[in-house]
Image 1 (cartoon, one colour):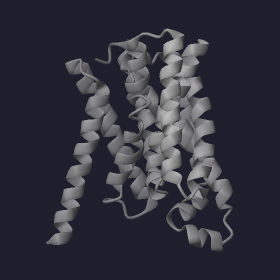
Image 2 (image 1 turned 90 degrees about the vertical axis):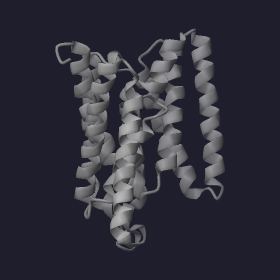
Image 3 (image 1 turned 120 degrees about the horizontal axis):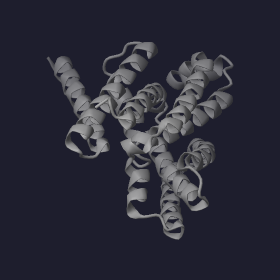
Image 4 (image 1 turned 90 degrees about the horizontal axis):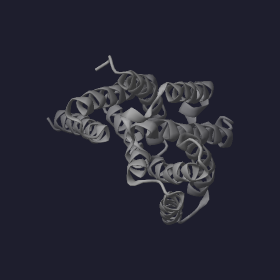
Amino acid sequence: MFALPFMRNAFLASTFIAITCGTVGVYVVARNFSFLAHTLSEIGFAGAAFAVWLGIGPLWGMLLFTLLGSISVGELSLHSEQKESSISAISALFIGLGVLFLAISGANSNYATNILFGSIIGVDKQGVIQLVGLSVIVLLLIFAIQKQLNFDSFDHIGALAHGVKTGLVSLIFLIALAMSVSVGAQIVGSLLVFILLTLPPATANYLGKTVGSMIAWSVFFALIGVWLGLYLGFATNLPVTFFIAVIEVFIYLVTYFTHLVKHNL
């Protein structure tokens, strides 16, 4: 398996994607941003389709759209009284735009499928370098504000009382989240990247007692999902995203019911 260059590229890229999404995902769950992550994945689809229409790499269009979308939708979710309805409307709009851009670009159905659900054979050496670079930037952003981000995410009222610049922290986190969506979508696709941003950290919540331990568990579960998913996808020639989704759901359900049984005994 590792004799094939595209599999080596896929495993290297997926490792950094899992580390990035596993880390950022802990804060996505803590800040109740799961719905936002799902919306950004749909905005990313429109961005990738827009890039295809322009004739540039889908990653760059996805980055542009998710960065703009993360900041605008994130602010909307904080200040709008009808935030769920507003975000749903924005999500629907961008799905429609994505379909439009694909239609007018003349892209075939396989290309559209790769954008939506990812492709392990679509990550070349240059793509790996780009993904690793973006992943490192995301992790540096998170670690640069981690103390304030921990405070704001797990005790927002306390953070305000202690003079933490929560607005700036939120802005930096939204940028990191947008980049994570764009990075993660390269393996699991734009519509399912929220799997890696929500399920591993949700599982980690049952096991971790500190923020650091939650991040460690989250990254661990994300790595299991992508590594095992890539192996099973290669062995069976079935979609990698299917296996990643099933693995992450299975891990979450086992952890959830185990936690439930322990606390009911």
